[in-house]
Image (cartoon, rainbow, N blue to C red):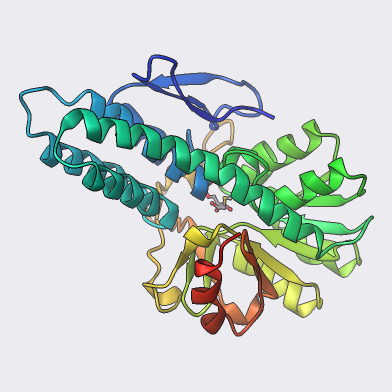
Length: 349
Ligand code: MRU
C-alpha cells in the first residue's frame, strides 16, 4: 500500500502522494508553505475525510515551526489554523484534527518550544490513532459479511483516504487477507472519479476481484442480484444519523433500500458531529464548474454555451432511515442512532 502522508525527516515539510495523478503516476509533493498546503486540500491532492484531518495536523505543525521569532506566535498559530480549517467545509475531520492540535498547544503553555513539542507529538498521535481506528472498523466490518459476497462501494474510503486500511474498504482488505473472496463493485464517482481512479486501483493492486461500473449502472447491477451489501465512508454524521458523503452516495442508498440490500456507513467516531442536529445543518461544498464540463475528459465535453448552468455539489446527505448501521472503531450502531452516539463516543476500545 502507498504511503500517502508523512513528515519529511527534517520536519520542515509535509510529503504527500498527489492523488490527482493516480493511478497513472505515483508522484510525491513536498509541501512547505501555507499556500501549497491549502492548495493541496482544495484541489484534492490530499483527500478523504480522515486523511484531510491528518494532513492538516501535520501542516499546522510544520507551519508553526516556521513562524518568525518576532511574530506573535499564538496569534499567528490561530490564523494558520483558521486558514487551513476554511479549505473544505463538509468533512468534520478537518476541524476535529485542528481542534485537537490547538488544545494540545494550549495545554503546553506559553513557551514556543513546549508548544512546538506538543504539536509535533499530537500530529503523530492523530495519524497513529487513525491506523488503529481503521483496523478496528475493519474487524467490525468482517462481522457483517460472508465469503463470496458482492459489495458495492462509492467514492474512495480506502487507505488513500485515511492512514492505512481505510474505513469502508478496510473490511474488504482485511477479509481478503483472511481468505474471503469478495466481488467489489466500484462506482466510478462522477465528476472526480475517485471510484475509478483510486478505489479500483487500491483494490486491484491487492488482487481483490474488482468490477468498475458507471454510477448510473448501480440499479442494474443490484437488480441482477450481484450485490449483497453496500459499504461507504462518510464525511460528517449528524446527531440523528443523517450522513454526508460524496455526491451520489444517497442515490446508492435509495437503490439499496429498494432492492432490500443492507447499506452500511463506516467512519471513526470523530466523524460523528453531535453539534449538527440533522443533515440540514451539514454544509455541502460546491465545487468548480470545470469539474463537470471538462474534468477528466480529454477536452471540454459540454457545449460552451453560457445559457447552460452548471451545479456541482460535491457531497450529498443520506437520510438516517436509509442506513442499516453505522460502523465505528467502538462498535456497530443500529437505528435509532441518536440515543447510541453519545455512548459509543465515550466507549473505550
Ligand atoms: O471529495 P473527497 O474525495 O475528499 O470525498 C471523499 C469521500 O466522500 C469519502 O467517501 C469520505 O471522505 C470517506 S473517506 C474514509
